[in-house]
Length: 222
Image 1: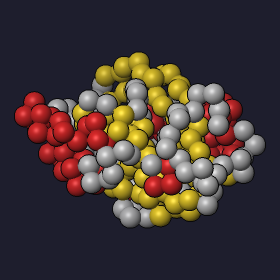
Image 2: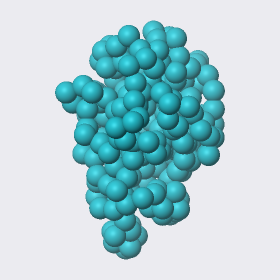
Image 3: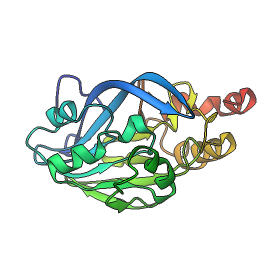
Image 4: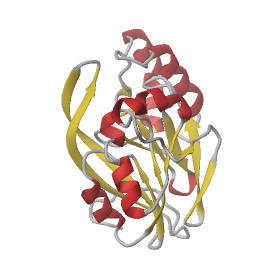
């Protein structure tokens, strides 16, 4: 495990682990641009891995991957700060980019001449380093937003769907508050309370820490 890897609840018998880095850049949508820091999560063992999101800096992500075979670059959604270097990274490591098809209109805002290589689907299972990664379609922040649950790690990677303190933003194009609440309630808060939540930005949390606040988020509207 790398020095900046979170200490998660992985089983000692499981070789699969989490490696992590943060890259910095911008997010642009609806004519506005903001500076952002993005988490990049690399899940695997010493031989193979997947990369969750490819923002800003392909070289920094490749440094975390090292010499491992990359099975796929998984996009939690297609906002530019999550997929900006996805084609560059995929070409460099010889891996496909996977995106839920509902996010293709968002993807084309950043990569109009390049399409993802394959689709993510709700309930899809991706074998990974002796473990399984489950794809959960969780629209709301974006129509094709997905979370990735790895039971062997006791962890879910939530992109911009669920953060420490509440749901992802829904005030811009392609987003809807009621939809993200339904996704969180029906697909994420049903996971075990001790499941670690690793989001696309900021600090990690747990399902148990966030679940009691669902009604509060609904009342405040964000």
